[in-house]
Amino acid sequence: MATRTAAGPRQRLLEAAEELTYSRGMNVGVDAILKRANVARRSLYEHFGGKDGLVTAVLERTTEADERHYRETMDAAGDDPRKRLLAVFDGLEAVIAEPTFRGCRYLSADLALADPDHPAHAVTREYRRRITALLEHELTRLRHRAAGRAAAQLFVLIDGALAAGATRRAEAATGVGEVAELIIDAGL
Amino acid sequence: MATRTAAGPRQRLLEAAEELTYSRGMNVGVDAILKRANVARRSLYEHFGGKDGLVTAVLERTTEADERHYRETMDAAGDDPRKRLLAVFDGLEAVIAEPTFRGCRYLSADLALADPDHPAHAVTREYRRRITALLEHELTRLRHRAAGRAAAQLFVLIDGALAAGATRRAEAATGVGEVAELIIDAGL
DNA sequence: GAATATATAGACCGGTTGATCTACCTGTCA
DNA sequence: TGACAGGTAGATCAACCGGTCTATATATTC
Image (cartoon, rainbow over the protein chains, first blue to last red):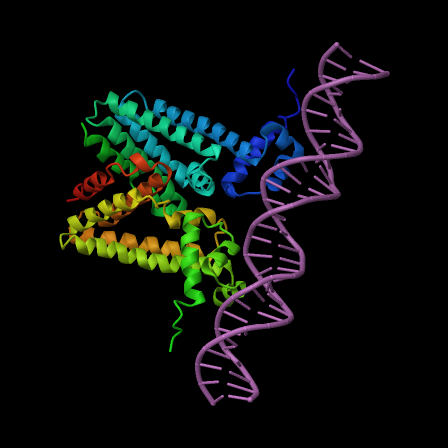
């Protein structure tokens, strides 16, 4: 039987680290994470080998969840590829408007982790590749003339909306959906 | 007479901090900056009051230079507002392609400086306002139907290009100029 | 009941952080 | 000459960093 006591230390560590690395940045101290998770110091090193392992595991968890979120957003918009793509940008504006929004976790991670060999970079790179592929797939279904190029452009737009949202909430996501429409329709 | 010996400590501190906060991030240590500037520890606190004051002064310096750079880029493109705007995005692609490019200094600063009251945030906010105004001015000259909105969209595009450039050089700036054209022409 | 694996609590390590301080050196100007 | 502002060099500080360690408690399993 699995433990019955409200999630083990490993799970609590992942959740605490996910929250704190987002709200306080990747440079948050190990002590703060341990305190929040109510976990002994040693358990962190048993389960994840160190801080690097923990934050990498966090990113693996959130990228999976975020990719799932993208898919669900599109599925909820029906079957029309154009509507599915635009739904992504509507969802983006909603995410940025949330009071807890503090920017793109993956961009922050890549900027904060100066060491180019940090395992976290591989996770974020793979995540971006998958989301771009998701966009390209819909563009291809739409018979877009340059699906690959347009997918890259849409993703730059996503990056821009998230970056702008982090630095100036209000006017940030002003009409990114509109721009997405322009990119999509330019190739039809 | 001003000192003759190749720039005083204040200047050297600004230059060293400008380089190191960019290449190693805002979290670079004071020691590294002092060593690079060849300046005594005390001088930093005499001139800038502390690290916060120094990095804020650095941002004030670079925002001025960057705004000047935007203006020069546009002026070099002649008088046609549309060409002047597109020149900005051509310049952007060039900047990102440079091997020393490591992302937008101001986005990094805002993300790394968690404290919302840090004086650096005011500097970056003002910078973004000025650049957006620059874009809006050209759009107005073009008689764009929604100059304010389009300026905001163009700036999101700039943010996106710089963010994308920081995380995946190669395909990053793929056709941001193309998207800029779409935004500009959509309102004519 | 004993053994084992898995927690916890917390002392401790060396290293680094930003900041303060004293002591000394050097050029300029009255 | 002497005073002084402005620079250098470096010791020192408390706080914090990630990581290792010992000792103890608590379960599960044989």
